[in-house]
Length: 62
Figure 1 (cartoon, rainbow, N blue to C red):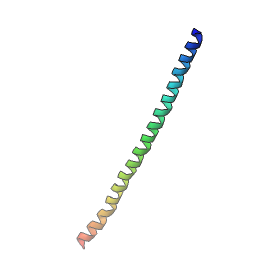
Figure 2 (cartoon, rainbow, N blue to C red):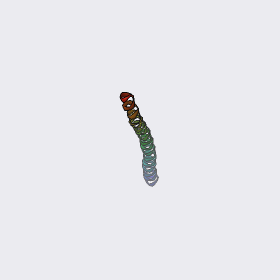
Figure 3 (cartoon, helix red, strand yellow):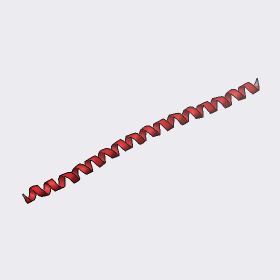
Figure 4 (spheres, rainbow, N blue to C red):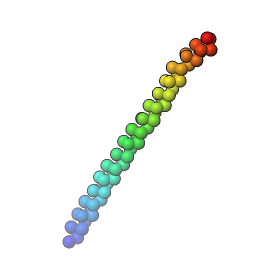
C-alpha cells in the first residue's frame, strides 16, 4: 500500500510540473507575441514620422 501511495505522489508531482511548464510556456509565448506586436506599432509610428518630415520641410520652403 505504501508503494502505491509513493507512486501516486511522484506521478502527481510530475504531472503538476508538466502542466505548470505548459501553462507558463504558453503564457510567455503569448506575452512575447504581444510585445512584438506593440513594438511593430512603435516602428510604424516612427516610420510614419520619418516619412512626414520631408513633406513638412517642403511645405515650409513652399
